[in-house]
Length: 487
Image (cartoon, helix red, strand yellow):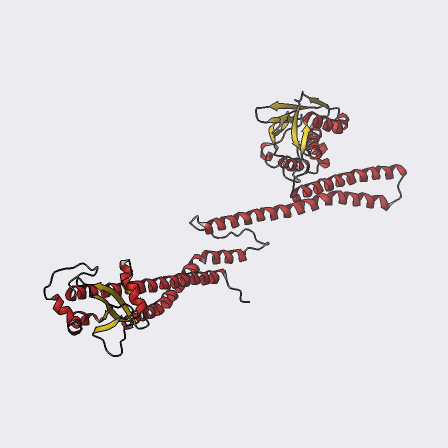
C-alpha cells in the first residue's frame, strides 16, 4: 500500500472535491442550456403560430378575431392553395415547417396544406393527438409542444368565426438543437479537465506552501535529541495554528529538558547520598576487621553502623515515597481529617526527639476544623516540618505551633528557635538534597536534604501552600495555608 503524505492526500482530496463540483456545475450548465434552448424554440414556434393565425385566419393565437375580412370566406375555401405560398414566405427564414389539418371530423384528420416541407420531413399526427388538442382546457395543452426523435413542434387548434376546425402544426428539426447541445458538451468536456488540472496544480502548490512550516518543524525536531535538549523550533511571527503548535512543542521540549536535568541531577544526588553512608559503613567494617578488637569496640562500631544504616534506610524510604508520589496518576484516598488530631498525633510521634534536647513545644489552641486529604501523608507533612524545627533548634530551645484563620483559609505556623536561613537560600530549601551545611554543625550529618522536598510534594498534592514565612537569627517560621471547613 502506498503511504501518501498528508500533503499529497490533501491535494487528492482537493482535486476530488473540485472534480465533483465541476461535474455538478457542468451538469447544471448542460441542463440549463438545454432548457433554455427548448424555451427559445417553443417561443419561436409559438411566434410563427401567431403570425400565421393573424395572416391567414385573422385571429390571434387565443382564437380572438383580429379584424373582419369580407374576402375571408372566399380565401378560406382556397386555403390548400394559398397556405403553402403565403406561409412559406413567413416561416422559411426561421427554418420552420408548417402543416395544416382539417379536423371537422376529429377521428379522421386530413392534411390539407403543407409549407416548406420536403419528402424527408414528416410531421406526426393522429386522432388521439387531435382529440387531446381539441379537448384541451389550458393554453399550454391548446398549443401542445411535442418533441419527437427528429422534430420539435407546436400543435395549435384553430376554430375560425365561420365554424371551420383546423389544427396548425409548426415544426423545427432537432439538428440545430442537437448541434448546440453537442457544442456546449464538447466545450465543457475540454474546459473542465483543463480547469481541474490548473486548480489541482494551484492547490498542490498552495498546500505545499501551507505545509512548509510543518516541514521546517520536522527538520528542527529531528535535530533535537536526548543528548541536547537545548535546541528549540524556530518560532514564527504569526500566531496561527502552526505558531501555536511551535509554541506547544517548544514548551514541551522545555519541560522535557527541565525533567531530564532534574532526573540527571537527582541521579547524581542519590548516588552521592548513598555513597557517603556506604563509604562510612565500609570504612568502619574494614577498620574493625584489621585487628582483633575488644567487645566494647565491637559494640561501639556496630552502634555506629546501625546509625548509618538507619540514615541510609531513611534516605531510601524518602526516595521511594517521592518516586511513588511523582509517578502516581491518581490521587490517594482523601477524607476529612481533624486538624487537632493531626497535630497531636504528630506531637506524640516526635515528643521524644524534643525531650532529648530538652526543648519545649508549645501548641496554641487549634480551632476545630477539618482538612480534606490523606491522613497518613498529612501526618508525614507535619512531621517533616516539626522534625526540621526540632533538628535546627538548639538545646533548651522553644518551638511554637499556632494557627491563623481567615475568611477563606487557615494558616498553620511552626516557629523554631534556630539560627535562621539566609535570604539567598529561601528559594532552594524545598529542593531535593539541598542542605545548608554551615547553619548548625551538630546536625549537619543527620540531614538527608529530603524532608522539606517531601513536605512540598505532599503539600502540592493537597493544594496546600507551604513557604518560609519569616527567617531571622532568632528562628524561622514555616507556614502551611490550605482551604478548610468547620466540623
